[in-house]
Image (cartoon, rainbow, N blue to C red; front, side, top):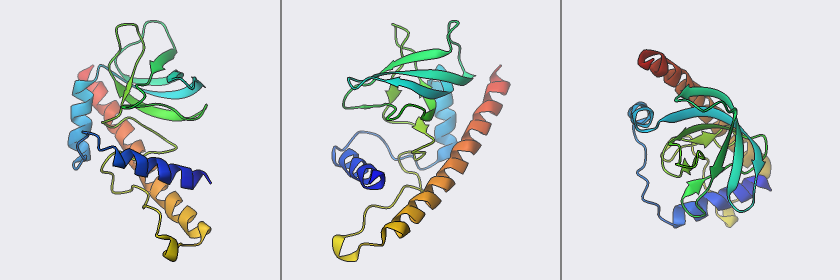
Length: 171
């Protein structure tokens, strides 16, 4: 059921036609994101409000600083911002701090969760659902999804390792 919900979400997102550019060179995009954002961190969702606000517990700061806080409040633009969907989700966040101290997770860019670790243009994106006349058994869809998710998670892990190296060089 969650797979069908996720696939529907992907199709709806693609149909709105965002201005995001497909990321074709991940290493170049990572360097640009590192330069363009003043706060990069790994965080876990600890509260989610249905009206768009959320709180993230900061697990590790990869770039930037927070004023004596291990919790970051966020607000999501209903149309163009990403936000956690479940309590406990872990995210890699590239962002700028808002004037009020909150953050917004940009819709375009490399911020993503470990539950859905795909960036726009990722070669590991889950496939679209097959046509109804050629539906794969549900277990085949799940296996395909899990294989791609595993590859994307490995890619996300390597990305965090690269950011740590960049942070050490910049420090």
